[in-house]
Length: 372
Image 1 (cartoon, helix red, strand yellow):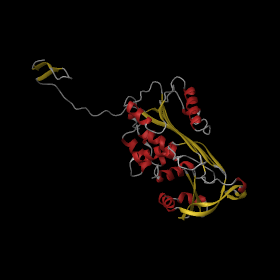
Image 2 (cartoon, helix red, strand yellow):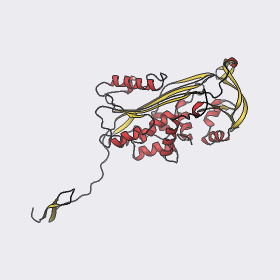
Image 3 (tube, one colour):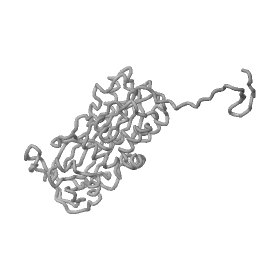
Image 4 (cartoon, helix red, strand yellow):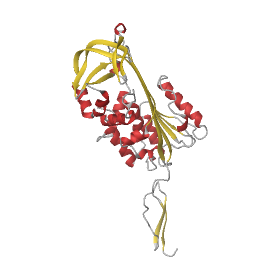
């Protein structure tokens, strides 16, 4: 099962990474998918329909949420020295004056690391920003700093929904440090020498659709799938389809592999998510037509007016470490939801009146009114 849907992952990757495929880029489908999933729990109408369609394709959101929850608990396994640790937080930070409906509080708390913690956006937006950034930095083991820039947290901010993720996993079979040496790497700017690790081992492997896939198992049931195009990545990346990727993942079988893999660290600056999410069909969430009434139980109209994401990933001889965070900033939406059309009742002729005790049904008075 893919969580979220593979089409969402590839389409959002294309929208986030942009046209310049010569630059390194990293993001977290888990983090963004979790943040949008928690938002969907408070959404209705077209807002929810767009979120579910993006995250689950033609399916339902429940299996996606279940898969994300499963992924927040690593398999203890029997991998000996293969370490695996994960930290996940899904936190709603409402303003002190914003009422949050109890059912939505329960929905947030049902997510991995789910919590509701108040913030004083109206009275101290700078302090609220510092508090949220500090919480993200703590969850991500110091890898994600200053997720929220100063300009996105204002006195008008009513709530911020944040996902934070940190993952550290050691390889089941580490790359020997003694084998790491400079080796040629054909970068977009020309050939260069980079520190390259070497490992000979039975690893999951598949080839097809213009790609080779090698699976590197790590502790906790984590695996790093290395996808190497047969030709130039700039042309192969946009042509990779969900069906091709799923086919590679399904076809991978153990095979003796001699692997050369560069050590790397990829870090992405804060990415603004509104336009990329609109490109994959999530639009209403960011407009005055947004339906997030389940968040407040209808007490206040909300929309998301900004969304940011940061991520970092490091791979070396011992394993991998990654962190990511996503924040959705909520403000008041203009206007109110259109009220239901009232049923018109005109008491313009003789009528009866019952005056009764509601709990017991006892009738105190019964009256007929013919000349009021």
